[in-house]
Length: 232
Image (tube, rainbow, N blue to C red):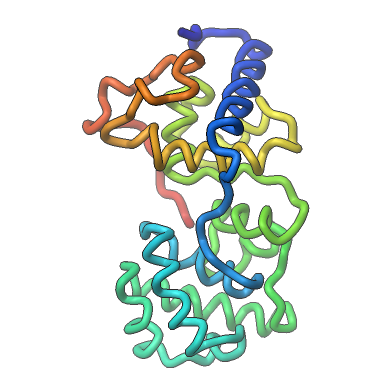
C-alpha cells in the first residue's frame, strides 16, 4: 500500500501508473452525454448537474426538437422549458441557466458557443467545472475538471487532500503531464461510477487497488470529504 507521506516524485509516478491501469481497464472511457454540436453539449452539461447522464440523454432529444438552436432557446417561454426538463431535477434553476446562457451567447458570441474555458466560465450558469468539461470536448484545451467522482477518487487514492474542486484540479494537474489531463478526467469518472462507488466501493474488483491507500474507504456511507460549494 502506498505511503500517503510519499515524496512528490513518487506520488507523480504513482498517479501516472494509476492512469495507465485505468486506461487498460476502460479503453472506451469518454463523456457519456450525447450531443451533436457545441450547443447540444452546452445544454446537456447544464442539465447534468445533480442528474445522471442517462436521464439527461433521455430528456435532450425532446428538448432539442423543441429548441434546435441557441436563438430559439434564448427566447423560450420559461414555463414550457421547465416542463420539458422537469425530470432532471432543479428544473427552475436549470431553465434559468439555459435561457440566460443562450442569451449571453447571442449577445456576446454571435450565437456561437465559445470554446475556451475562460469564455465558457463567464456564461451565466456555467461554473469552472462545467466550463472545463465543455472546453476539453470542443477544443484542444487540456483540462482535468473535478466533479464528485474525481474528488472522491483523488482523496481515496491519496493524490489530494484538498476539498475545493479548483485546488484538487491543480493538485492533479501537477502530478500528470498536460497531455494526460483529459484522459485522466474521463478515467476517474468512469472508475468512480463503476467500482469506486461513494457508499460501497468495490475494492476487490479495483484494477488500481495495489496503488491505492484507500483513504476514507472505511468511512464509506458515512461522512466523507467532498467538494465544497461547487458551481457546476
